Length: 552
Ligand code: ADP
Image (cartoon, rainbow, N blue to C red; front, side):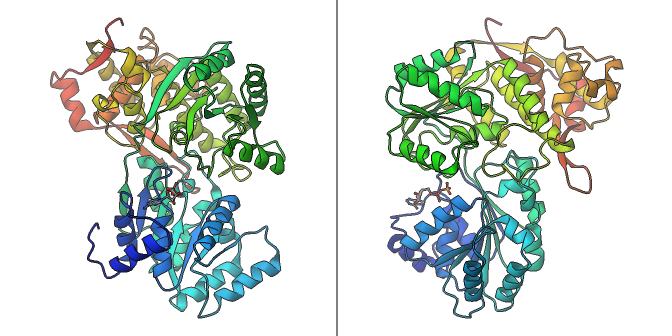
């Protein structure tokens, strides 16, 4: 796809320079554009700031017809349209909260064969609920004027991801109705299972996938035990490492945001809070002050951050445990967009895990603006299970004080990373200087046996709970406290069994399978045994070793 011999190449390059003011393409941009312009369905995984917008705005400009863009937030849409209009690219949007006459005006323009718009942005709710819109899309389609369908933030389709939004699931209708129109799905965050889910739900055909490394070499990662003096520790850390620089502190609750901001102000920092309970004008004004460096530090819930493009964020601190590795990765990704060294510090305590778990079960955790207000089922059944599993993975990340943090994060996105390339830019690679190799074959065999004896239908967190001897309601409901291996891993050091289990997955002794479980398509992941590899482990005298710090 990198060839420069496509019929549109010259036009592409000229417009990239003239209209968008870019001297060249960034990695994968040309390839994505060539694939979508050739008519393929394309799925793009590119980190935030990588330049996803250009991959559909440039084709929209040079192709006949209109590009339909589904984007989750009106504020993001407005921002995009402002930039497009500044570049003299005619674009419009439709959303439910616009005046009807204004919507009619745009719809009327769509019926014209000489429609001036090159791009039409809509929210997913609009697609799900507006027959009028669908009729107009039908009409564009029959007149061969529906050039491309773009699904931005495509991971919202998947309940397996951290930003599930029900209306995104209905977007599969677009491919059914307009099978010839190429679809371009874009996201900055997706594990292999999310990707699979999205491709299926959208009905993408022979989809071409572009994925870029999610490694951000200029970000430094640490997890620090959280004490009662956490805010004092944060104050000290900022004064010693990022004095007068700009950063974000993510807090769990609205109250935490206010308390942390107030304390930091007492310590002399220019700090403010930001959360979903403020009125929109107050929120916008705080964000503006921060963008203009009148405030250095924002203490915020995950409601803060979407669409923020401040290049010089020098630190992202998590005052509490994030809800998932994907969310954590995305929040950290707001640091160091300019490529300069920046810190990502996470303060972890097990009691926060209990707190977050409880809040998730009660459905009272503040959510990113991508989903807030929409995710009405967030504390029920399968979704609760998914959220708990995501949280559990976050806990094992925090409790792992051995493996490279980059390796662990990237592994979550299905990306292999050689920890030698970390170059001591995470706490574990810095502090663990010498290792011993420990034989873990026996633990591995027991875990495999446990997966088998429970019928290969449970998640990794459940297997670990049983192995460590939990008597939780779920364990008892399935009578797993009666198994001979229940509690067999009780004696192991904290986090050890979970490391071994992760290792079994990465080495493909166990396979994590996404399971669609009912008519609503709820998903969960279950562990299965890879028989051919396991044969060797159990009967072939194969041994498995894992690195542990030499003091362990
Ligand atoms: P994403 O949607 O992947 O987060 P954007 O599309 O918002 O990223 O692009 C991030 C920034 O990079 C924008 O300011 C955009 O103008 C700039 N950009 C995109 N492509 C290029 C390019 N080829 N050359 C220079 N700047 C680019």
